[in-house]
Each structure stands twice: as structure tokens, then as C-alpha cells.
Length: 143
Image 1 (cartoon, helix red, strand yellow):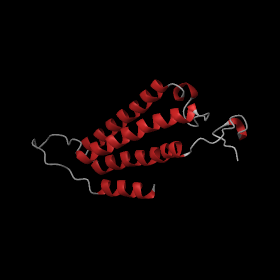
Image 2: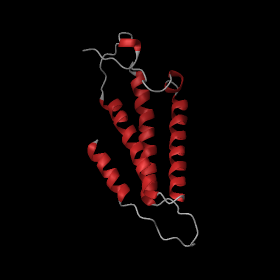
Image 3: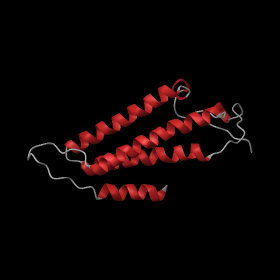
Image 4: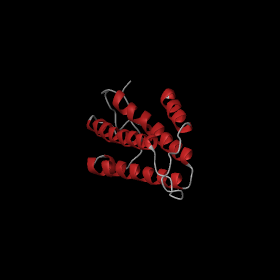
């Protein structure tokens, strides 16, 4: 995780603006920004898959409401809307000449979502104990 975040921060620091054909045209997203948005969309898609896999094996979602997490279409729509919002924020920051901040924003979003997704996929299938969690929250595993 540290290496991934470090690589994303390095990419954010070396992002350059491309040459514009019209002098007063607002800047557009460059290839590095589109690559990060694509990685963000892929991370979110993998999160939908891994969340559904975990729910099928007896786990519970800790962050989203049950109505969203248990419905694949609703979860995919939620993740898609999140990626669309990330694109909008990155576009607006770039238009206002804050390209490095826009790239950093997307890199941080990927850095936050990716470890949770990897945790879902690497957990395996231990025996869940859904009703013995303290406060009945989160995922509790058998010892």
C-alpha cells in the first residue's frame, strides 16, 4: 500500500499541462488524469465485486446501508456516481488551474478505496459469527 500511494504521489507531482491550441481555452484533462480516473473506476468495480462476494459468504458491509450493499445494481450505481463525481471535481480543479491538486485528489481516492477492496478479496472464507460482534457492528471472525 505504501508503494502504491508513493507511486501515485510521484505521478501527481510530475503531471504537466499540455499545449493548448486556443490561448484562452480552459485546460482539459491530460492522459495521466484519464489514467487515474480509469484506475479509480476499476478499483470501484473491483470493490463492487469483492463486496458482493463477501456478502455471499456471510459477511456484512460495515460502511454502506444494507439496502445499497445487498443490491448489486444499487452498489454499482453508487460506485459509478462516485467515479462521475471524481471526474467532475478533477475537471473543475483543472479548469481553475489546480491540475496537481486534481491529480492528488484522485490519487488519494484510489489510495483510500484500494486497501479496503484488497482486504475484501484476500480475506478468504473464514467462519463468520454475525451476531456475536460487540455492538453488533462490523465483521467478526471466529478465532
